[in-house]
Image (cartoon, rainbow, N blue to C red; front, side, top):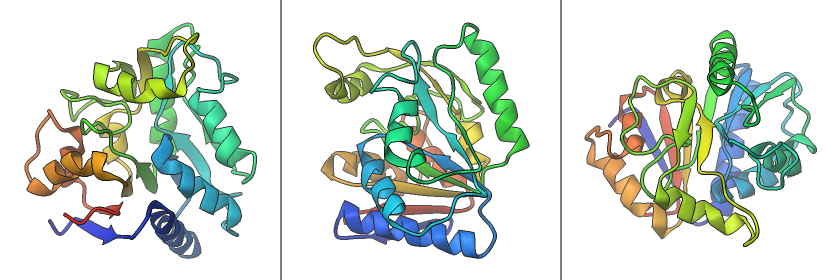
Length: 233
């Protein structure tokens, strides 16, 4: 798999440093104008390192992979809130874009977001990997032709993400997400996968067979993928 470069690190903190180095290299080469961002616990050390660094994003446009439907951007568990708290309030970008999970017309919102992506092609897209192999909120069975769309979250994804919601809060069961095709348009994909829970998904990727049941395997068809992990496979 010549298209996939694997970098094994000792810890997620070391992995975050490596991601920052890769981003710095692309910035210095003048190749980074549009950056796709991800959320979740995997990305927290990455954004911490970024905010501590001298990386300059003032000429970079940012797009996020996904957002819950039905909670406002001010909600502490919205991805808009997450991004503002961890990165955007500390590192200025030229523009930042996140899907609007409160849009009255969700189909129109998907079209709007996908149009913006086509107008601003992604140079780099960050990705985490779900335990069931999902990328963004593209659950098993998602078509490789999918663009930004509404998705119903699987029980396994809800179980993992519900830890961030208190007992008196109802976790959304639907979300807006970039599709597989949207993600695959990025020139470079940087995938972060830390911890034993991510081993099954990575093992599926490195088996080298594309299957809709493990969306992470779609990355086999991308020309430039860097996987950063603390797992020895």
